[in-house]
Length: 120
Image (cartoon, rainbow, N blue to C red; front, side, top):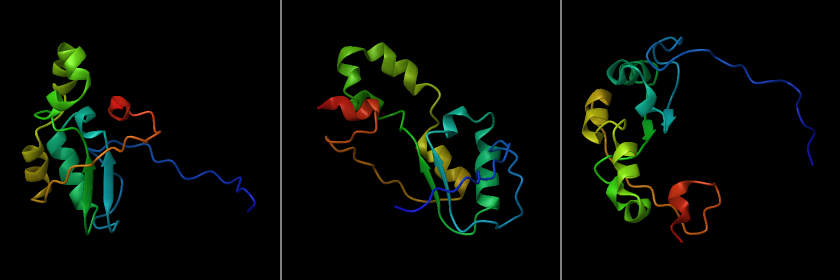
């Protein structure tokens, strides 16, 4: 076993809409289940593209597909409420200047406490 480092990682206090980094500071960027919480989606996407030279990965829910979620069978009103804040995927793609969409499968043996993983 290696020794644990007692140095804390640098924390940056910022928002997606005002990233405190120089243009092209990163090769890639990722936003994981966060875009639905941004105050200004367009500004956040512009910023993430500004600071990134390469690929940008946005992990989010497609609000048009949430009715496929297993919870919809039991509580469709919950899914309708959950879908509201999520931006349409085409809006995200336009804000990034293009891209592609790939579905992410969640395996039956996923143990990350995602609600989506409890279908089995």
